[in-house]
Length: 506
Image (cartoon, rainbow, N blue to C red; front, side, top):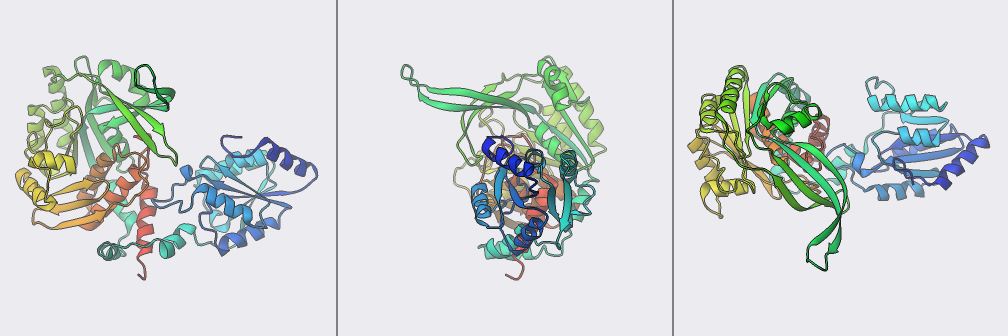
């Protein structure tokens, strides 16, 4: 079985024999999430160019249209396509383009909808046409603009049961969402926080060892990804043209990963700062969902050296004066000394903080204890419990108390499997329920939510829009394994429009 296209050697041989018999092969490729009359018309027009119609569908993993796409899984989509009499062969493709099926099937004609004809900057289409030319095929643009499956699904099949949320989304219908993201490009952003290296080691559990009662695993592969503030900076720099990360990395790690993660002059290499590597053993449990078996932390707590502190203060002070926004993500691993936090307090009107509780700092890195001032903040339920000293919380009341304590304008609370919440100085509160029921990995989603809310606070006064977009972005983040990637603007926009379409006329 080919890795990129799920086709057997026998099926490849069959198509080869048909070509030798001078049979013309036509290829159509897409997600085909919901087959509708437009698709059927496209197949009919395509078949007229040849004798054999092959349809290939993009696998679930490579469909990046929005939170609720694909609506049907790849096997359901494939089986439906195969039942269409007009289709002779159908296969699943495990990549984002049709390059592999073109190279494997070598079609005489590759048929696309007419809406693709003027997409001169479509990189994927350009790659497909290049592969097509090499095998002597031609591209054909057919029909009229076809309504997308996503649009039909959002209008007819996806229903929001929460009437309050539905009404709130309706208020956004006049928002030009592209312009809102254009505004973000101009923001000058400073990010301060620890760089963490996240290592994901995939294993396959073999059961319990009979001699020691320990879990026995077979190691499959391992990947080191950017974590902590480094992952946040990667995401923020995809949105705004002017962003800077100030951090500090152990000298050995700096030397080893400088090129891989593009450490610049603002990431200090230090002999004294500890290594921060978090290795997670994971197992694929199917449907692109992973289970974390356990975590190994390569970390030894130590105080920031005077020389490192001086360098950090100098850099922060220089960039803080010039920026519009300071995003602080404190993972409690030693970067934020008292002098550094006091310096950041001077820029409290630009300051957005996220003070995190984790297994290495639990009970010691508490918001409101280290940082005393901020414009805004974001935290999760556990971090709010630590601040309040109580397990049972009145969320709005505790958030308002923290806002007053920090003299902040507003704050955000994330409860991943429930909702996210906004509260401001005046006590106004907004909730948005969770938007993704297919969480793959929640690590880093809170950081992405915080970064998005921080950016939007600089350009938009629409509190619901800011919370809603931040929740959408966080929902995309939990669809990604670790920090192997980050939510893309295009997919965030598609999800926003999907929700907007879903409430039209309802």
